[in-house]
Image (tube, rainbow, N blue to C red; front, side):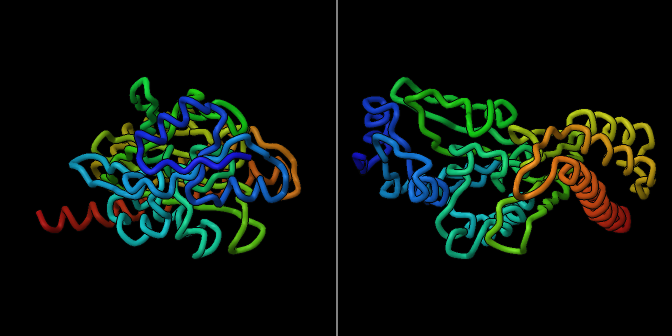
Length: 296
């Protein structure tokens, strides 16, 4: 195994163009595990830790540009107001040591359906900024996952950053694991309310070959909230609406049986998490709605 260590982003792109099979490593929290267990033996390993741009972030008017290697710990500490769902997901990542090393770019590059960041990125609405010597492009996160541990990157492309919409409403994240820390998700669920567009977005992890959105559930809830005037009146969502939303989220899953859980359990758990996160986010929205009305 040859080790490449570019000193700049331009060097990294040139090296990737010359060696398309090179596997990038920054935090190493996924790649090194696979190498240590001999599940992967790449011809080239490319160390990106010297490239400072990957550790930078910028808060814009509508979005946050998050460098691919910004650690989860930084997201938790510095970007919670702008990215609350991703901050909550970051809390569930492994241990403090790994949260100080791992970043969202690694989750996207590995593209495991169990990656903790994926449901939050889907729910928030993100675009993945990728680049090669041929140029750069942005891939909507909905189109980024193409199969089990496969993504839309071309062989000569690297992930540079993720552009994530700033929260304009409450967001939540929930994860089921076999223990409370250092655990791969049995399943996970992210939910984001977007009051500006009066829409809801979801994200489901570890319950299908790829991370997915529950689009039928979103469409149902969007229609129910609009028809019932819920965005304007701030009323409690009825149990029947919450149950239908949960059932549709469970139906969006296509899970497997494995050592962490059965397919039927995963479907059930996703439904429970969907109902609970909807309750939590809507109560937060109602609280803010009442505060706004009182101020008026």
